[in-house]
Length: 393
Image (cartoon, rainbow, N blue to C red):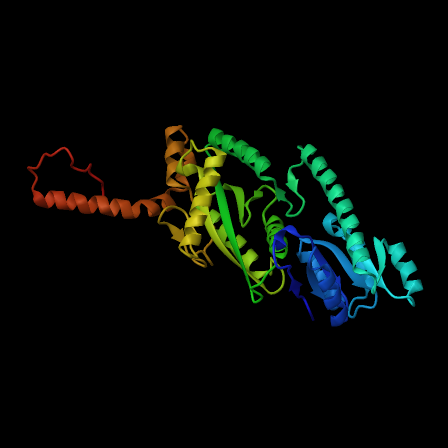
């Protein structure tokens, strides 16, 4: 199998990329030499590898293919391209390279939607001229589509990931924040930063983007209907979810990590590494949706910088992978939320959570008692104003 790139010597990024699919190394080399001054070329020696390149490399602008490809024929390859659900692929210009004895196959290719035909021994000027015309037409269509997309301001879901667009996500989280404040409930933001690694280190830029989108689709399929998800950066995703307790949120974050890292979310042969940060509204009830997301993003970045597998809750807090495995979801209540409920006269809602809250407070209570014992040892006559209040045992 061949999947070689022949970049031109300079300004490769400014030149369109052409995929050449032909079973003959000599034909691929000859076409590459003819195009190299004007285009960047990528090779495939069979139909299946050509199809995988089209799927994953978003920078391919046109396909040159013969009809007698091994594994997947040129006609089958053309059928896949034209029947794709992805608009970029479906509208890809396809030029079929033919010989004189392929008249019947030419008719079939025309019926399948081939863009143009060209003889394998066509002069260089004709080859380049055809490609220039097709790429200009394609660029015009893309510009019109982009203008239409700009006008579609009501669109709320990214079709590539099936997650919410970031602006709409923030608006929806703002509504959840307002609801949580009114009802003194909690809201959590989970930020997941993603890194991909593959045995093929020379990954294509366009292919990498497609694989990140696959990760986004996996995440969208893994969250609940009541949760909100978005792609917040190129390699970052955020999920907002209503919280019934810290342990439940950590368990949910750990489950998302397990799904993304263990189900080939980015495609076969690609490993996914996640770094996770979590923020909750109960840490500071006055936070806006944007501030809540920014805090979770900051903590995820801290985890990534430290190469940590812990789910970061604060500057120096975290839960290691597997730490919650096997533990029931106790629906524990955050201390800050408990205090807010008590101040609002809703202490009865805290009662059922008291055992877990006391468990969280025990380290603090032990420290207070230690300090009280130290003060007592100094003598009862010390009336300094910084004495600690008495805590019953």
